[in-house]
Length: 184
Image (cartoon, rainbow, N blue to C red):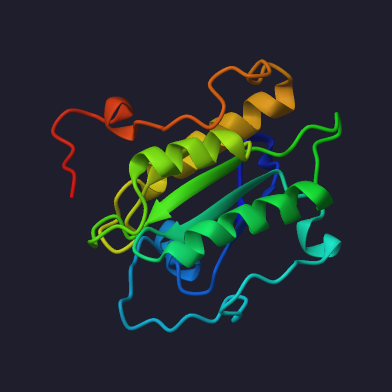
């Protein structure tokens, strides 16, 4: 997925995660703001974690790793996706690229993982932060992408997070949203 920015600099943002977690729907939702519940997953097509080629990762500026909160396997596989990403892609200074962990399908229950577990996992695995999303309900999609772009811009200009400052924290998007904004 490519996003334009001022000076028409194109940023490559990777969306990875297991096959059924909602990646294609996220891209469609973000690109067209249309969620099609009849959509069949085709991106990647693999049901299980598969290592991506270096070529796939090349020159990406940021990454989103998605999992389905109702499916524990997709959560544990997020660690494999992150390790694979970090082994193949770093910023010019050697640090990992900004990477958000998205807990998708937050409108469904029961969750297979607690918020505490996700929070600890995000910190331990070096994510820039995490939040819950629902592509179906269009919850936190544009907002989390905006957060990712902000983190990406600050890593480009070099005024990014100091080591250990708020890494992996929960991103409370509700705080940043206008009054009257509803939640699921």
